[in-house]
Length: 155
Image (cartoon, rainbow, N blue to C red):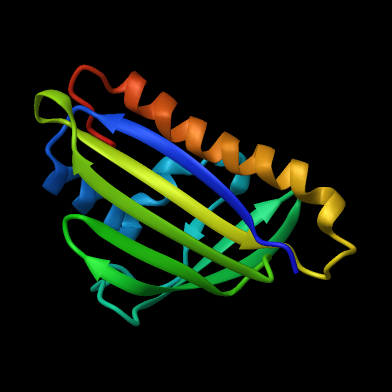
């Protein structure tokens, strides 16, 4: 199977501790996910995050509902956390979130997503569409930051 790798960077005008806390709170995931995905967290909130924590979600894409479950495999506040898909649309998916100090007291958030599509090699031609969708999600986050400037509330 082929692994695909994507990298996204987001600059946020807030301290690293605040940015880490926002992204590590599963309750905020719906706020930073494009509305057309109809994203919701199924696991009862609040969720105490630690290595091994599992989180379940529901989404809908192209009118088709599906579930997704991820597990936290690395938890190093306020620098990094990693979630891995346990069940969902990918054959495998690993999402690393890293946070470092940015210019003027802000934060640089970097997202690295590694994924393998299901039913290899049958689904490989769909990868450009998957890449576009993931790009849309991360652009939505960037646009949200700009909407909330100069003092972002949601990021």
